Length: 228
Image 1 (spheres, rainbow, N blue to C red):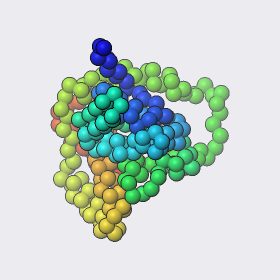
Image 2: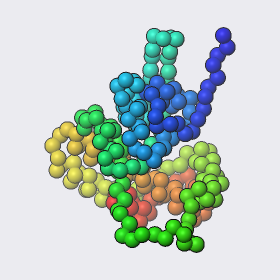
Image 3: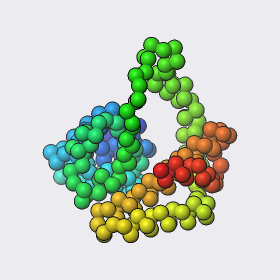
């Protein structure tokens, strides 16, 4: 029988089994899970569907993921998974995703709580904006940015003052908690801060010059936003 062709996708349904997620990571250059109902991800981390929790935790660190099954002599290996998960929903939808604090999945998510709007917005106003229109207008610019980043090995660095502030802050937080789950949350929060610094710095350079340099120094305003 001929070899089955690779199926490459960018967007994958959050309502997927662990096997589908791992195979998609192995064949896709990058993978995005996006859903407006946060608890839709619980299918992927349920025991009856294979529980993709371990794969999600490994992908967060870009660690190699492998899977082997007797049926069809299945062997799947992903050397460096690139996965982004973006979910929105209500606080009550978070609980089904957090099966326990000990396995570390919760500490790999960053939570943003949006405040309630203080007043009703007129939906019929001529100033109303539509997400789809904005996305369509922005897409060409994002594509150019994506292509630039694929062709360059960009290095983003913190300034000496930022590094000192970073160390002071996280040493203080790390010392305030007992060894265990909380220390892992603190350490991963530090990784999140650095990743946000990288993203904000790249976007700022592109917005100002439409060109990404090979070496970017993080501006203080972007470092402050990331720490916040």
